Length: 410
Image 1 (spheres, one colour):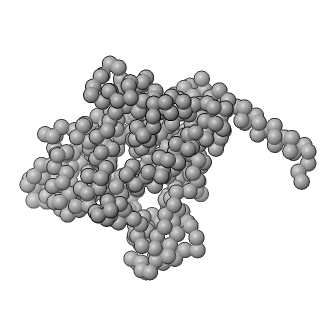
Image 2 (tube, helix red, strand yellow):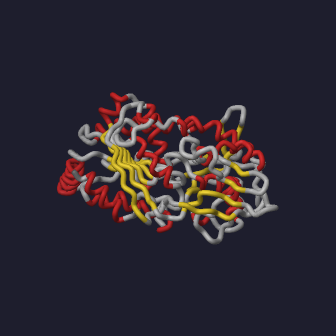
Image 3 (spheres, one colour):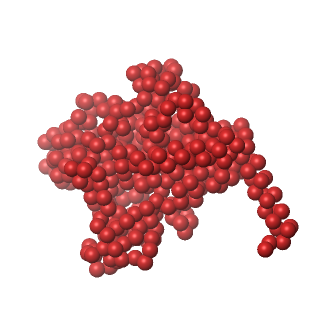
């Protein structure tokens, strides 16, 4: 039994912490693509490499685990992380013998740190959470986390949206019935947009104070085409894009992030070759010529979520980077078609998402009325472009941290 002083001290601290949350809007953090920890357990009959394990004694961290992202061992990681598409059920599944789960529902730690060891390359929402704590927020009370399997698009994340609704209501109740702020990064913004489309106006009025989005790809990104074509090395120098591509292209979320026909015109060339120039209306041919028809099938499964670009029906603060070179076209040398390595033509954006997509929220402002403002009405839309803030550095950008502290401490 604890001494009375310790019990009293504990209760004092506990109630003080709860009291600090009264009167402020609690925050739920929704991560983007690659922004949630993932754990796996293995019971496989075959492996792709003699170095790979067939079984594990329990769950282990598979994302982000830097020890698995090294040459040779990466083959094991790819086989364990990739998805297998069934064009009959229109669903994906893990490699046989692999089970993957998302740990830490409701807690902030799994989205603050992608690496549970808290290695510095694995930081994610850490700086933002620290900034919120500095103005009175409390981890796991008034700052919550909503991680999900980022490999999958909304059509395979129905359970996430149901749990998120429950988390919003629970967080609202726990914090003295204070309305909730949804704070997102990257694809988390479009996940949250779909979530809010699923809710009634009455529910949103009761439970949601606002949504804050950082670097949301409202209309997709040309980089998704680049990943399908040649892969992405995740910013490392020891891993080849072509190796990582084997896993990356199996994710339906990547197909969801392809450029939207609402944002790119039919005449704009996205992939240039001497045989054919591919535009947003030529994606079926692009995937056929790339010999990856599953990419087109997953695009068909997810395009509905891209085309519903009605406003969220809540106040929105839309922050994004600018003036960072961002791929806007793949150009293949004559004679290489889609077999070689293209030259990347760059335009404006945040290094990952093109400006026109980042600025998609402007279509919901009162001074830019369009066909997209009809459903759910137009709420307050505040937007801020941050020169030289790239897609990931925006999470620790001092301008963002000050913006959030000023807004959320009121």
